[in-house]
Length: 146
View 1 (cartoon, one colour):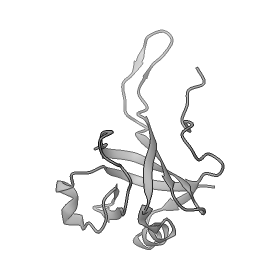
View 2 (spheres, rainbow, N blue to C red):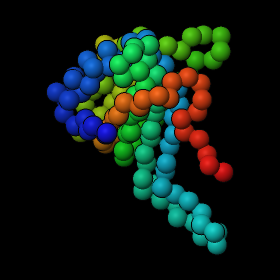
View 3 (cartoon, rainbow, N blue to C red):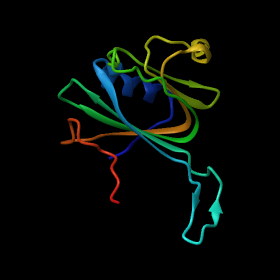
View 4 (cartoon, rainbow, N blue to C red):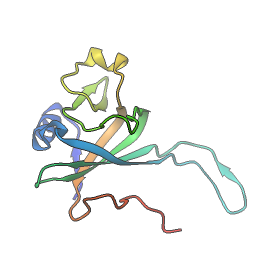
């Protein structure tokens, strides 16, 4: 069941529920722009969906896998560590700023810190989330049926 996050109070409750994503990692990301080319090669060149889905797995028994769906994506700054470094999230930040929701993989950031943040940062118009059961491990959650 999806739950919506639209207020500062809902942000606080969600972040407390997931322990600010302590001991977590970004497992997968999926993006749907809304643009496509159909069978007759006509193009629909509009980014009219802009939906980013992100799966985070956590070292907690409850809510061990969380899927967040950011709707109306404004920007994604993805800064993955290479295989020489670990990529666990020790703390994260979620803030509302100018009517948008921001999430980043670093903790204790303020609104003024967001512009210069050097890690992964997501900004979108809306956010909803859900807990996913029985899908832990390396098997892909977002996979093609093709």
